[in-house]
Length: 231
Image (cartoon, rainbow, N blue to C red; front, side):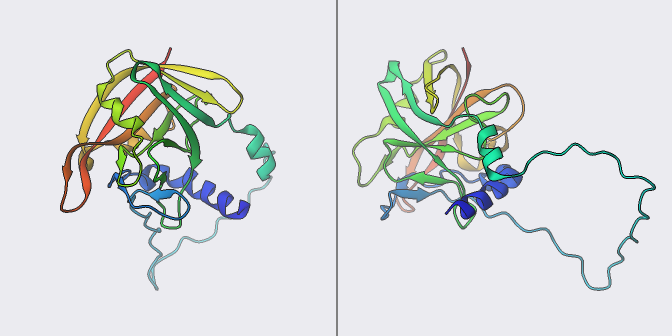
């Protein structure tokens, strides 16, 4: 399993923006054996190979001297030690939300995983964590389910600017955020590249489904996206 996770990490690091453009396309989860559900995120298209006969650049002549390039260990153990602690719990006291968070990566189709149980939130493990120096920490969960009754993220629709959000990480550190904006956006119009951005000031992005429900296709037509900044 570690080999698969490492491979997913490399994929997630390189194609995070494109791999999550369709997050939470359907928020009524279909029950599965292991409790995990997958959003319909489009697969990443491999780079086009040159056609036969295409001109190719000639190999460059070797440099006269090889510069002294700094080296960094690429071992999995070193990479794990360098990563900030994963988030394990999210609380929104004003809304009565208190949920466990579990890390998720990409499945075999290149989609971000979610959990069928809407009482469990998913953190995109190949993106920033609460203690990261920059970027958006993404935490998502289903708004409801045909099988489970607990609907914590459904309460996010009542969040007001300034609402306190607390995310606790695996080291026991509590990270406090204040909600800046709450938007219900049609799925095709959500700016997923911004939601999963690895640059800029540290911030938190919460995502679930919202808006009108399409009963024929059994899916919500919009996403509820909340952004919050550290306090």
